[in-house]
Structures are given as structure tokens and as C-alpha cells.
Image (cartoon, rainbow, N blue to C red):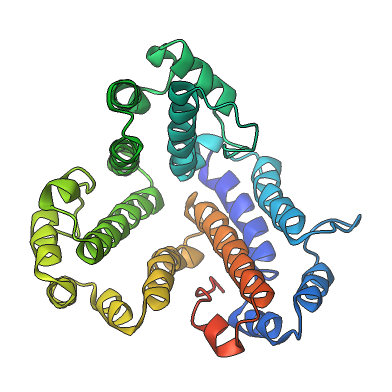
Length: 324
């Protein structure tokens, strides 16, 4: 797509950004007196469709669909967004391997839909051991994970292998991409995942070997130093993060688990915000997709909190930073 076409697409996105939820809008949603009132508020804001979805999940699913309808309307090459689907693709790989290797006939929905690679395609590849039909970045780990499940039935090890392969694929996509926004997305995704792994490993007493089988090299963190910090306790993790440009992560970690999870998501939005001033690239389009997904995730969190009768202050601790 030429710079001129990007300029048109970005102009359209700029107009649509006006309808994104601001912090003030999120505060209005939190102030709704009940779960039902929250749904009414969302419908008033144009969420869902004119037919009026009955459930929260139907409303949220419709909003997810709208994201990609917009991108298709703008005639944007979907390959620009492919890396954003990697985590869903690899989740589907996990689900397919466990289903095929265990003979599980559970018909409940175990796959993410709406990706460029249909779950049935992945399942067929696993069942027939036709690994070559999978994307190149999935082939090796798919074969290794299938062998692991068949020989040891170790689902946790299978998950660990595939999670690391996911991060590696994202990082490689970032390295190969000419788009700065994709590079930033990849670096942020992998760095935050490494920090999460370190925190989880420290809390659950995982070994350095486990962390080595989970983390992936990135530019902003030295994972060997991060692993050693994790073995030294939470204070050591916080000290390492503070000294390496992740002081906000350390402060959030000291505050509470929910504050730390909020920081993890906020970091991506903060990474994307500079795209607002970039009119001639795919950056603002990728940022808009991530902003909408963050918005939907935040609404889902609020609705869940309302269902569980959490106090407004407890909800505020969990809400994510908005793009606008």
C-alpha cells in the first residue's frame, strides 16, 4: 500500500478514534449501578448491533468482529496484522495437539476463531502428522510437542514448549519487519512475557531450567540476569527491573498482583501511543487494532467485576489505560 493510501486509511482511523472509550467514559461505565445498567450503557454507545445482542459476550464478540470489518473496508493488507494473531494460532496448536493426542471428543469450543489459519486445518495437520502444511515457524515445535504428548503425556511441558515458540515467532517477525510498529509490538510482547515468567517462577519456586525453557531473548532485557533475579526473590526482581528501564513494573509488582497485570497491558498501549502522530504508515492502523482490543478487554473486566459485586475502587485498580 502506498503512502497516499495509508494517509487515507489513517485519516479514516483518526475519525474513528473519536469513538474510542476515554478514561472518563470508562469511569461512567464503572459508575453504572448494576451489571444490567452497564449493558444498557454499552448499547447506548453503539456497542453490539441494532438487533440488540442479549448477552455481554455477544456484544463483546460483535465488537471484535467490527475491528476486522473496518480493516477490510480500508483494503489494508491483512499480512500487516498477521503477527497479532500468532498467540491465537499457537493456542489453537496447543488445543489441537491435546485433543488429537488424548482422543478427547469434548465438543466445547476450544479454539480461537477468526484467524487466517482455520483450527480444522491445524487439527488435520496434527492428526495426519503433516507438519509441513503448517506455517514454517510452527512446524518444528508442533512435531516436538506431539512427540512429547505421545511419549510422556506431559501437557505442562507441551504448553511450555509452545509458549516459548510463540514468543520466538513474534520476536522473529519483529526483527524481519520493516515497520517500526511491528518491531515495537514484538519487543514489548516478548519483554513483558519474560517479566511475567520471572514473576510467576519466583512465586511458584520454578527452577532456572524452567525459565530457560520459557523465556526468549529480547533487546531491552538480559534474560540470564532476569532469571538470576527471579531465583533471588521478588525484591531482586524489582531491583533488576528498576535498573533496566522497567521501574513502573517494579512499583506495580510491589503494589498488588492486579496492579502488575494492569501494568503489563498498559505497557503495550503506552508503546502504541506515539503512532497517533504518524500519518504515512501502517502504524496507526495496528495501534487502533490494539487499542480496540484493549478497550474490549477492559470492558470485559468491568463487567466481570460487576457480576461479582466488587466495589468501584477494586474495579478501578483493574482497569487498563485507554489509548485516547
